[in-house]
Image (tube, rainbow, N blue to C red; front, side, top):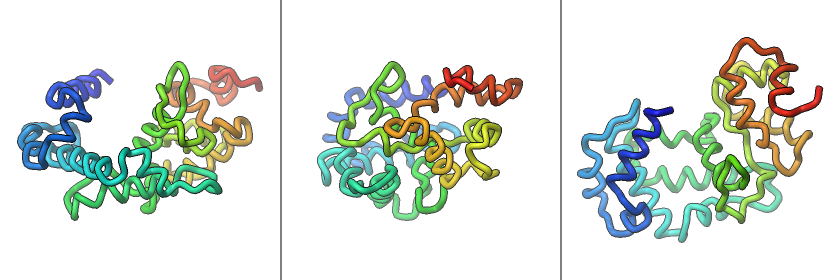
Length: 212
């Protein structure tokens, strides 16, 4: 966690105001700014390309939310269609270059970071700041990783061994039966409990405030 915060701080220190920076900066300047950047699998070139892609989407659509909404349909049960369009638009400028930060929903990836970002932006409470008011929280998909996958299997919310998009949709559908308007409500507490391996499914639920 501290390494993540340190990395984010390093990026923000270099760009000062993200909106102003992206408005004025060229792709070449981005490459120069982050030429020595490295975090796990992410290189400075990939980060610079993602920031440039973000700039292009904002210029073309007005905002990331407007790009997302261009793919979202009122009849959609989840954010999958809107997310697919947003990822496709952001990926366009990569032109075959590595893009580990932008897995495609169409390829079956759980897209944990994407769905976590949407959770932050769509929900608004003590955990999530909100801001994307045009998107309904009822459409959100549970951010699926190995911890959420493990606890979901223990709670029999999914039978899939892979923590992929199909598993994420199964778990989301199960939560939607409990909270139709906010199916990812339990994500925050379950993920943290999921890191532990010494609790029973009943103890997991009690920890989340769910009566068994």
